[in-house]
Length: 249
Ligand code: HPA
Figure 1 (cartoon, rainbow, N blue to C red):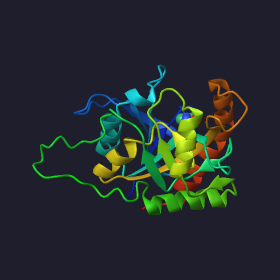
Figure 2 (cartoon, helix red, strand yellow):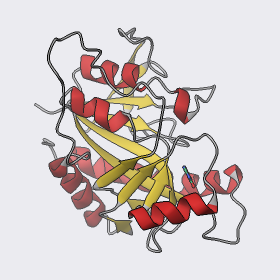
Figure 3 (tube, protein in one colour):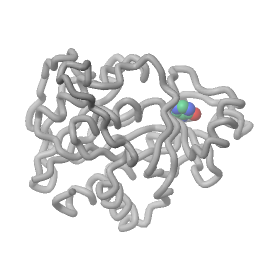
């Protein structure tokens, strides 16, 4: 039996449409998650929601306790995770307001607690990370977007930067040369930690700005938030379709 958990990114503070039945304030071997995990019901399914940045105080991307977050979802019985991520667009088709479902990532982060493996098991844990986003869960997400006839880029490379500052124009040029479609700060180590615990993980990105140097517009949080607010409705609709479509993977 699959069980869906959603990790909400910037601007996605709740899973709209879900009836919350309880909150789980868990402690994990790695400390507390960003916020108590909400358990709810949607179309007869039990689902879980966790805001990655916490609330009301926002935890910046480099300071998020990704290990506690993923551990908590796994402990609650979540099998499939949809991560919602606000990103900047690098490829011309990744314009502000468009959804992107990446199939690959490049990790440019550093100094984050990026594994559960502290060598205690006595054997090496080299997980297979060829496909950071679980192909069949991605496919289900693509189907849901397709049914809604929503503009979406259904393949792409997510370049994960350290933040919290945005990138320089030269860094974005380098990332474009590396093949990045979008740039964000939160898919790693989240995706790898999910893989370590055997969770199926896929990302639903919302492009909220053109990446640094690609537009004449200044990069402001206010502009990003207003794009996000409009796209949040699409995120709700995609998740709704996904849950309605039944067993996930
Ligand atoms: N860069 C990195 N992370 C982001 C951006 C960006 O331009 N926009 C939203 N998250």
